[in-house]
Length: 260
Length: 283
Image 1 (cartoon, rainbow over the protein chains, first blue to last red):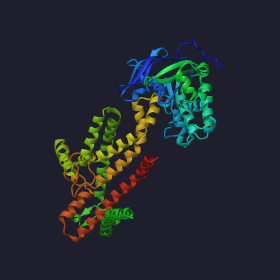
Image 2: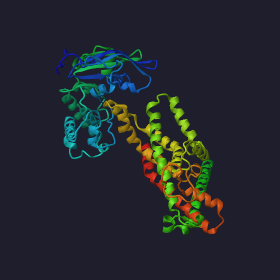
Image 3: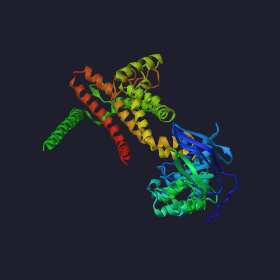
Image 4: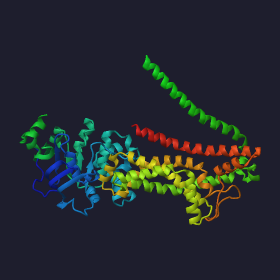
């Protein structure tokens, strides 16, 4: 049994009554969740239910999509991230993101690690070297990369690329890391590496993980919210600690999803 | 059987058309090379013009053309980058974007002589520069602008959204994304577009004949006002128009061959970057 972490601590991320429209179409209806510090918060559910959209509401990556309208509110450390005048770039530095496909920039391993950090804060040469090492260590990539820091990142394996992306996000020192099916493009060994990392990282970071892999959810998440489609729009139909959702689901949709 | 015959027929027609096109190109180059080669020598390239083109070389014409091209590139690049970024980054409405593109294509279709007249009125007369290398550079830059800007715009749009999303998700500001993602990844388009536009600008006569270039009596410009230069295309134009002297004829073909070589090497320089763009488009 995994211990439900710090269930009563004040939430790091809180979503209240959030709905998302794409034009006239409702994508997400009245979503409310609370992510506690040090938690791995899982979002599961069938494809197309709006898990990724919900995730992208949390760092306002939804701003990039024209025609997408977010109503309701989301709060980071008790402060709304949707108020006018909120510096969205500061928010995104605090809420990092790992994508489904690793996105490395056509540059060296080292430059990829520093890609965000060196543009967000002044770093001396010594700082940079130290940051490259610490971020790569944190992403369990240092031993493989310490002699290849100047290699083109595009030459790495997909699994290494994904860990490099994680190192790049970690170098920015985010409080929360959003992960959008981070292992779906990876082989089992790399998936294992990322899962181990998730478990290790939650000591210092809060993680929101979208996955459609129930076994993975069971292995790494502390709390699970299940996003399913009801009346044509995604809703959180069940949200509870991981074990109770997976072993004793209450909702018809979740039971169907888990048995599929 | 019938379909097969049709296939063969279509292939034959296509091959014929292609060989006509290639044949014309090869013939043109062959004639210019054959007639121009005898005139090419070290002194032809390093001496200044003498006896109204019947003797001497084309040194200052080459220098003048290179100076015009460098000026044009210097003027064109910032304009093209700014225009492409406006189109890609700041214009949100599809209609506004389309307007920018349409304007560029229209500009591309403007006859070069119109650019020449425009430059004459605006730079030579209104700005009061007189015939000047700077005026010529500006006019050539206008002609290059559509090619460079469109090449850059296309490359900017070909950048996968995932790179932009990844940079945005790190918390980078728009300007940082422009410098760290958009421009580096579109650099190939900028290089290709510039070289192709330069190759075309190198041979333009109409835009510079009223604004920048004279036939003889100029070396390096001393300032901006009334500082014309010599140039290869105008040299060829004047010699071809005015001379029946066979000595001039040889020099004329020589100058044409040098100009062709210049254009060819600019196009050739653009090739690696174009091939890379082609490969990336098919990954």
